[in-house]
Image (cartoon, rainbow, N blue to C red):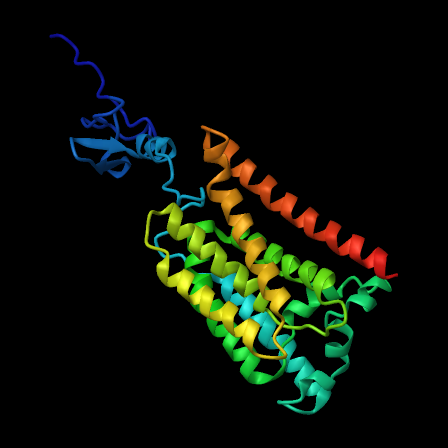
Length: 288
Protein backbone atom coordinates (compact mmCIF):
# COMPACT_ATOMS: atom_id res chain seq x y z
CA UNK A 1 0.00 0.00 0.00
CA UNK A 2 1.44 3.36 -1.10
CA UNK A 3 1.70 6.01 1.66
CA UNK A 4 -0.16 9.24 0.92
CA UNK A 5 1.90 12.44 0.98
CA UNK A 6 1.18 14.69 3.97
CA UNK A 7 -1.47 17.34 3.43
CA UNK A 8 -0.07 20.83 2.85
CA UNK A 9 -0.25 23.23 5.76
CA UNK A 10 -1.05 26.93 5.86
CA UNK A 11 2.02 29.13 5.30
CA UNK A 12 0.96 31.36 8.20
CA UNK A 13 -0.26 28.56 10.48
CA UNK A 14 2.02 25.49 10.00
CA UNK A 15 -0.12 23.42 12.42
CA UNK A 16 -3.22 23.71 10.18
CA UNK A 17 -3.53 21.27 7.26
CA UNK A 18 -5.46 22.79 4.35
CA UNK A 19 -6.56 21.93 0.86
CA UNK A 20 -6.98 25.58 -0.13
CA UNK A 21 -4.46 27.88 -1.78
CA UNK A 22 -4.13 31.53 -2.83
CA UNK A 23 -5.03 31.92 -6.51
CA UNK A 24 -2.45 34.71 -6.83
CA UNK A 25 0.71 33.25 -5.30
CA UNK A 26 -0.34 29.58 -5.13
CA UNK A 27 0.70 29.09 -1.51
CA UNK A 28 -1.49 26.88 0.70
CA UNK A 29 -3.59 28.89 3.13
CA UNK A 30 -6.27 28.14 5.68
CA UNK A 31 -9.73 29.74 5.41
CA UNK A 32 -8.79 32.33 8.05
CA UNK A 33 -5.96 33.64 5.87
CA UNK A 34 -7.92 33.86 2.61
CA UNK A 35 -10.14 36.66 1.35
CA UNK A 36 -12.63 36.55 -1.57
CA UNK A 37 -11.30 38.14 -4.77
CA UNK A 38 -12.73 38.90 -8.21
CA UNK A 39 -11.20 35.61 -9.36
CA UNK A 40 -10.72 32.98 -6.68
CA UNK A 41 -9.30 33.98 -3.32
CA UNK A 42 -6.19 35.84 -2.21
CA UNK A 43 -4.16 35.40 0.93
CA UNK A 44 -3.73 38.33 3.28
CA UNK A 45 -0.07 38.77 2.28
CA UNK A 46 -1.00 39.22 -1.38
CA UNK A 47 -3.75 41.67 -0.41
CA UNK A 48 -1.26 43.82 1.53
CA UNK A 49 1.21 43.72 -1.33
CA UNK A 50 -1.50 44.77 -3.77
CA UNK A 51 -2.46 47.72 -1.60
CA UNK A 52 1.17 48.86 -1.49
CA UNK A 53 1.48 48.55 -5.27
CA UNK A 54 -1.55 50.76 -6.00
CA UNK A 55 -0.58 54.42 -6.34
CA UNK A 56 -2.66 56.73 -4.12
CA UNK A 57 -5.16 59.01 -5.84
CA UNK A 58 -3.93 62.62 -5.79
CA UNK A 59 -5.32 66.03 -6.61
CA UNK A 60 -3.87 68.30 -9.31
CA UNK A 61 -1.59 69.75 -6.62
CA UNK A 62 -0.25 66.31 -5.72
CA UNK A 63 -2.14 66.08 -2.41
CA UNK A 64 -3.53 62.64 -1.51
CA UNK A 65 -7.30 62.40 -1.79
CA UNK A 66 -9.02 61.24 1.40
CA UNK A 67 -12.52 59.83 1.25
CA UNK A 68 -13.73 61.84 4.24
CA UNK A 69 -11.23 64.67 4.52
CA UNK A 70 -12.13 67.50 6.85
CA UNK A 71 -10.58 70.97 6.43
CA UNK A 72 -8.75 70.86 9.75
CA UNK A 73 -6.36 73.69 8.86
CA UNK A 74 -9.24 75.99 7.93
CA UNK A 75 -11.00 75.16 11.20
CA UNK A 76 -7.76 75.73 13.14
CA UNK A 77 -7.17 79.13 11.49
CA UNK A 78 -10.73 80.19 12.29
CA UNK A 79 -10.30 79.03 15.89
CA UNK A 80 -7.03 80.95 16.28
CA UNK A 81 -8.55 84.15 14.89
CA UNK A 82 -11.59 83.85 17.16
CA UNK A 83 -9.44 83.07 20.21
CA UNK A 84 -7.19 86.09 19.61
CA UNK A 85 -10.25 88.29 19.13
CA UNK A 86 -11.64 87.01 22.42
CA UNK A 87 -8.38 87.90 24.16
CA UNK A 88 -8.44 91.45 22.79
CA UNK A 89 -12.10 91.86 23.77
CA UNK A 90 -11.39 90.70 27.33
CA UNK A 91 -8.36 92.97 27.64
CA UNK A 92 -10.30 95.96 26.31
CA UNK A 93 -13.40 95.00 28.37
CA UNK A 94 -15.43 95.66 25.24
CA UNK A 95 -16.72 93.37 22.51
CA UNK A 96 -16.90 96.23 20.00
CA UNK A 97 -13.91 98.43 20.92
CA UNK A 98 -11.36 95.63 21.21
CA UNK A 99 -8.70 97.75 19.49
CA UNK A 100 -7.99 99.33 22.89
CA UNK A 101 -6.44 96.09 24.18
CA UNK A 102 -2.71 95.79 24.83
CA UNK A 103 -2.39 92.81 22.48
CA UNK A 104 -4.07 94.71 19.65
CA UNK A 105 -1.78 97.71 20.12
CA UNK A 106 1.30 95.47 20.24
CA UNK A 107 0.38 93.39 17.16
CA UNK A 108 -1.22 95.80 14.67
CA UNK A 109 0.90 96.45 11.59
CA UNK A 110 2.55 99.87 11.82
CA UNK A 111 5.57 100.11 9.49
CA UNK A 112 7.64 102.48 11.70
CA UNK A 113 7.21 100.05 14.61
CA UNK A 114 8.40 97.18 12.41
CA UNK A 115 11.40 99.30 11.47
CA UNK A 116 12.05 99.72 15.18
CA UNK A 117 12.48 95.94 15.56
CA UNK A 118 8.92 94.77 16.23
CA UNK A 119 8.97 92.17 13.46
CA UNK A 120 6.19 90.05 14.92
CA UNK A 121 3.67 92.62 13.71
CA UNK A 122 3.93 91.46 10.08
CA UNK A 123 2.39 88.10 11.10
CA UNK A 124 0.46 88.95 14.25
CA UNK A 125 -1.54 91.71 12.58
CA UNK A 126 -3.10 89.10 10.30
CA UNK A 127 -4.90 87.54 13.28
CA UNK A 128 -6.42 90.78 14.64
CA UNK A 129 -9.82 92.23 13.77
CA UNK A 130 -11.57 95.56 14.30
CA UNK A 131 -14.80 94.48 15.98
CA UNK A 132 -17.06 91.44 15.56
CA UNK A 133 -18.39 92.34 12.10
CA UNK A 134 -14.85 92.51 10.67
CA UNK A 135 -14.11 89.14 12.28
CA UNK A 136 -17.37 87.56 11.07
CA UNK A 137 -16.91 88.65 7.45
CA UNK A 138 -13.33 87.38 7.24
CA UNK A 139 -14.06 84.08 8.99
CA UNK A 140 -17.10 83.41 6.81
CA UNK A 141 -15.02 84.01 3.67
CA UNK A 142 -12.23 81.83 5.07
CA UNK A 143 -14.70 79.03 5.81
CA UNK A 144 -16.33 79.13 2.36
CA UNK A 145 -13.13 79.49 0.32
CA UNK A 146 -10.74 77.61 2.57
CA UNK A 147 -12.53 74.27 2.52
CA UNK A 148 -12.10 73.74 -1.22
CA UNK A 149 -8.63 75.25 -1.27
CA UNK A 150 -7.42 72.91 1.47
CA UNK A 151 -8.96 69.87 -0.25
CA UNK A 152 -7.15 70.54 -3.54
CA UNK A 153 -3.83 71.89 -2.30
CA UNK A 154 -3.45 69.61 0.71
CA UNK A 155 -3.11 70.85 4.26
CA UNK A 156 0.54 71.90 4.28
CA UNK A 157 0.47 73.62 0.87
CA UNK A 158 -2.79 75.34 1.77
CA UNK A 159 -1.33 76.63 5.04
CA UNK A 160 1.77 77.79 3.18
CA UNK A 161 -0.31 79.71 0.62
CA UNK A 162 -2.32 81.31 3.45
CA UNK A 163 0.79 82.46 5.30
CA UNK A 164 2.54 83.66 2.14
CA UNK A 165 -0.59 85.67 1.28
CA UNK A 166 -0.49 87.21 4.75
CA UNK A 167 3.17 88.09 4.26
CA UNK A 168 2.48 89.54 0.82
CA UNK A 169 -0.20 91.79 2.25
CA UNK A 170 2.14 92.98 5.01
CA UNK A 171 4.91 93.63 2.49
CA UNK A 172 2.61 95.77 0.34
CA UNK A 173 1.51 97.77 3.39
CA UNK A 174 5.14 98.30 4.40
CA UNK A 175 5.94 99.75 0.96
CA UNK A 176 2.80 101.68 0.03
CA UNK A 177 1.00 102.54 3.30
CA UNK A 178 3.76 103.41 5.72
CA UNK A 179 1.66 105.68 7.94
CA UNK A 180 -1.25 103.26 8.34
CA UNK A 181 -2.35 101.02 11.20
CA UNK A 182 -3.43 97.72 9.64
CA UNK A 183 -5.02 94.58 11.06
CA UNK A 184 -7.10 91.69 9.79
CA UNK A 185 -7.00 88.39 7.93
CA UNK A 186 -8.24 90.06 4.74
CA UNK A 187 -4.86 89.90 2.98
CA UNK A 188 -4.66 86.15 3.53
CA UNK A 189 -8.31 85.70 2.50
CA UNK A 190 -7.71 87.67 -0.70
CA UNK A 191 -4.76 85.37 -1.33
CA UNK A 192 -7.14 82.41 -1.11
CA UNK A 193 -9.44 84.16 -3.59
CA UNK A 194 -6.55 84.18 -6.03
CA UNK A 195 -5.66 80.58 -5.15
CA UNK A 196 -9.19 79.32 -5.87
CA UNK A 197 -9.20 81.17 -9.20
CA UNK A 198 -5.95 79.48 -10.23
CA UNK A 199 -7.32 76.10 -9.09
CA UNK A 200 -10.44 76.54 -11.22
CA UNK A 201 -8.31 77.39 -14.26
CA UNK A 202 -6.10 74.36 -13.61
CA UNK A 203 -9.19 72.14 -13.41
CA UNK A 204 -10.51 73.75 -16.61
CA UNK A 205 -13.53 75.15 -14.79
CA UNK A 206 -15.08 78.54 -15.44
CA UNK A 207 -13.42 81.10 -13.09
CA UNK A 208 -15.79 83.96 -13.94
CA UNK A 209 -17.63 83.88 -10.61
CA UNK A 210 -14.39 84.15 -8.66
CA UNK A 211 -13.14 86.93 -10.95
CA UNK A 212 -16.37 88.85 -10.40
CA UNK A 213 -16.09 88.34 -6.64
CA UNK A 214 -12.50 89.57 -6.66
CA UNK A 215 -13.47 92.57 -8.80
CA UNK A 216 -16.30 93.54 -6.43
CA UNK A 217 -14.06 93.25 -3.37
CA UNK A 218 -11.25 95.25 -4.97
CA UNK A 219 -13.76 97.95 -5.95
CA UNK A 220 -14.99 98.09 -2.34
CA UNK A 221 -11.39 98.35 -1.16
CA UNK A 222 -10.87 101.35 -3.46
CA UNK A 223 -14.18 102.99 -2.56
CA UNK A 224 -14.54 102.75 1.21
CA UNK A 225 -12.24 104.59 3.62
CA UNK A 226 -10.50 102.69 6.40
CA UNK A 227 -9.95 99.52 4.32
CA UNK A 228 -6.40 98.36 3.68
CA UNK A 229 -6.28 98.44 -0.11
CA UNK A 230 -2.59 97.52 -0.28
CA UNK A 231 -2.97 94.71 2.22
CA UNK A 232 -5.71 93.25 0.05
CA UNK A 233 -3.83 93.65 -3.23
CA UNK A 234 -0.57 92.34 -1.78
CA UNK A 235 -2.29 89.27 -0.38
CA UNK A 236 -4.14 88.67 -3.64
CA UNK A 237 -0.92 88.85 -5.65
CA UNK A 238 1.03 86.59 -3.28
CA UNK A 239 -1.68 83.92 -3.06
CA UNK A 240 -2.17 83.89 -6.82
CA UNK A 241 1.55 83.60 -7.55
CA UNK A 242 2.07 80.91 -4.91
CA UNK A 243 -0.71 78.76 -6.35
CA UNK A 244 0.58 79.30 -9.87
CA UNK A 245 3.93 78.02 -8.64
CA UNK A 246 2.31 74.90 -7.20
CA UNK A 247 -0.07 74.04 -10.05
CA UNK A 248 1.45 75.46 -13.22
CA UNK A 249 5.20 76.00 -12.77
CA UNK A 250 6.09 72.26 -12.88
CA UNK A 251 4.27 71.97 -16.21
CA UNK A 252 5.94 75.07 -17.59
CA UNK A 253 9.31 73.57 -16.63
CA UNK A 254 8.23 70.22 -18.16
CA UNK A 255 8.76 68.34 -14.92
CA UNK A 256 7.65 64.73 -15.31
CA UNK A 257 7.82 63.04 -11.90
CA UNK A 258 5.29 63.89 -9.21
CA UNK A 259 7.98 64.11 -6.54
CA UNK A 260 9.94 66.71 -8.51
CA UNK A 261 6.75 68.62 -9.31
CA UNK A 262 5.88 68.87 -5.63
CA UNK A 263 9.42 70.02 -4.86
CA UNK A 264 9.20 72.73 -7.52
CA UNK A 265 5.94 73.92 -5.99
CA UNK A 266 7.48 74.16 -2.54
CA UNK A 267 10.49 76.04 -3.91
CA UNK A 268 8.14 78.55 -5.59
CA UNK A 269 6.25 79.15 -2.34
CA UNK A 270 9.48 79.49 -0.36
CA UNK A 271 10.85 81.95 -2.93
CA UNK A 272 7.74 84.12 -2.59
CA UNK A 273 8.08 84.06 1.20
CA UNK A 274 11.73 85.11 0.94
CA UNK A 275 10.86 87.92 -1.47
CA UNK A 276 8.15 89.16 0.92
CA UNK A 277 10.55 89.08 3.86
CA UNK A 278 13.16 90.82 1.72
CA UNK A 279 10.74 93.63 0.80
CA UNK A 280 9.69 94.00 4.44
CA UNK A 281 13.30 94.06 5.59
CA UNK A 282 14.43 96.56 2.95
CA UNK A 283 11.53 98.88 3.72
CA UNK A 284 12.15 98.61 7.45
CA UNK A 285 15.80 99.58 6.94
CA UNK A 286 14.79 102.61 4.89
CA UNK A 287 12.41 103.73 7.66
CA UNK A 288 14.85 103.18 10.51
